[in-house]
Length: 117
Image 1: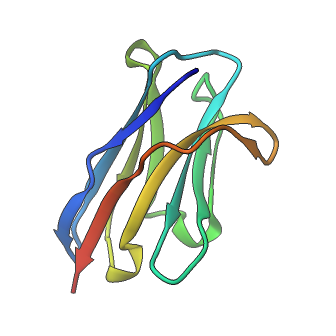
Image 2: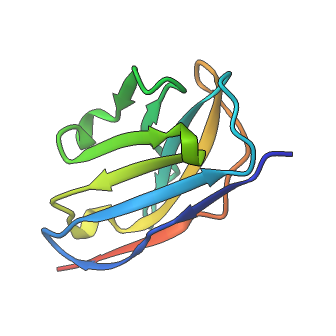
Image 3: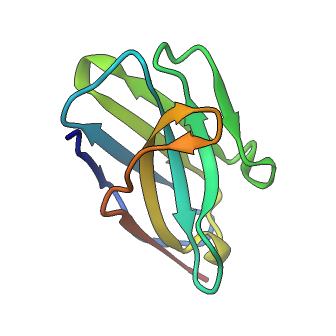
């Protein structure tokens, strides 16, 4: 079974940036990858996804312009560059395989992002 491991979270001041990484134990050209997050008091929400080729990306409307998803298939990795962070971005960030439209694989363990004001 494929495993996804997220990393790169940490503490950052408001206005700062972080780059999250997610690596797959076994990549597949059949699947895209997506980032989700769970902020305190809310359900997990979609952040962004990217096709295996990297040629197609999509974002949650509220995050467009601040977050950028990319991937490096040679490293079996997907990244999430997060800029202009605010305390509202605090939460646990997860990556998942995109199995089909609105269908996703198992959750990783997540990486904690904490943005201080």
